[in-house]
Length: 173
Image 1 (cartoon, one colour):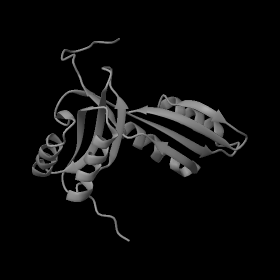
Image 2: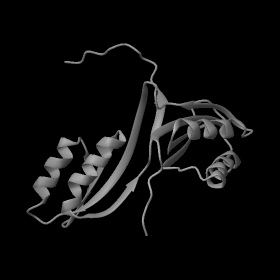
Image 3: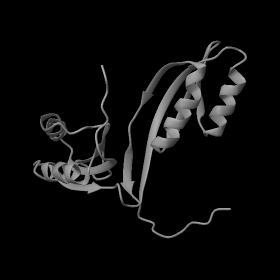
């Protein structure tokens, strides 16, 4: 069975809602009913009590994303929708990757983990579990580098994102 890739670029939508699982259900229903692609979805309580933030990663051209935006604004408990795609934002993913380790491969895998600033979170005689956080490109890259060693299991959060407030330059030496 062939997999098709949706036309258009990746978009990250940050949606502020009243904390209500029916709202999440309605949003998922919009994507399902209209055939919009959803790559990832996160739902978590917001700093303000009674509020939640949903982050959706989707693909589409500008017209499709504009349609998604319009549909989201029609959901009762949706307060704000921001397309972070062309804005300065902070975006992260978390992945836990369990890798098979032959004794000869363990030092190499530890070096890979170090290069990606990943943490070893579980270790057995024949497996390592690594935790990596970063943008999706970093997470994808680490997974691809580890693939030849034998990925046994993997779990990934999808993106969480917020608009970046600081707009200046940072010089860190």
